[in-house]
Length: 285
Ligand SMILES: C[S@@+](CC[C@H](N)C(=O)[O-])C[C@H]1O[C@@H](n2cnc3c(N)ncnc32)[C@H](O)[C@@H]1O
Image (cartoon, rainbow, N blue to C red; front, top):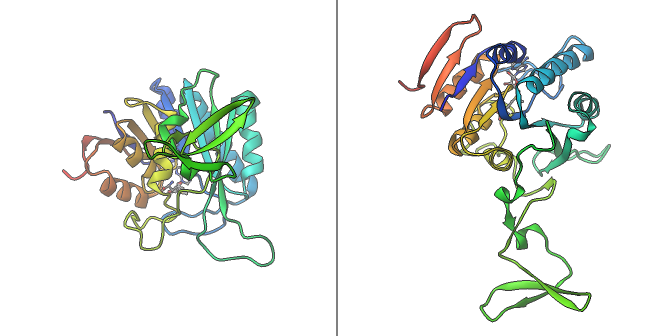
């Protein structure tokens, strides 16, 4: 597997990929949310709104350029930037490329009283063409977990629980243990807790399960998965675990350090900001 990490600005890394004529099948990004905060590992601060959106436009265009015709992009954001980035993505992918606005809902953090507590992130999913690969059944959840509804519950002769509904003179059975594809509202993946063993210490780290769901459904083993704001390397770890190659990018030295430690079992070429290349090696060696 040809895994790479570009330790540089995403715009530069993407230009380098395009110049090499490379392409990726799936890209997930979790860019700065425009919080105005300094997280230590990186500062989510911009001189102006336009500075932020210019950077995002350049990155999204760069991603589009290296995305396989059957590829997809997932953009993880929140209410701060959602409206403008949705319009920007419609421009770049055309509105026909829009697939989903995924709501990732969680319960962590405090409660607001001056407005309703903001307890979800948004993940915008765009496909480059109608032929993009996607299989929601790869993340099937047991029906019992997917919905508890008013249908009458019963148990069949083999002891399997089901709910039944009569329609048009026929009875339909929906078994609890049958897999159903998830909807676009994800409430079954918790945010990382303070003492979660998954935590690397990198700020704004996302749960591995979230990335595994996306990687499973929108790519196949052997594909290349990219994250141009890799942070602690959650996307890269999900790709590696699921047999996909990965390309990570990040301009923070802390991100490079964390990714090296986290993906110590993966062969990974590191391309440095000054153009230098550290050839593929297991990070530990
Ligand atoms: C929200 S964090 C990503 C967290 C990641 N999803 C995880 O699970 O750990 C955003 C990352 O974008 C990086 N970043 C911000 N601007 C960048 C740019 N122009 N080029 C490359 N990386 C950038 C920051 O260093 C930070 O690591």
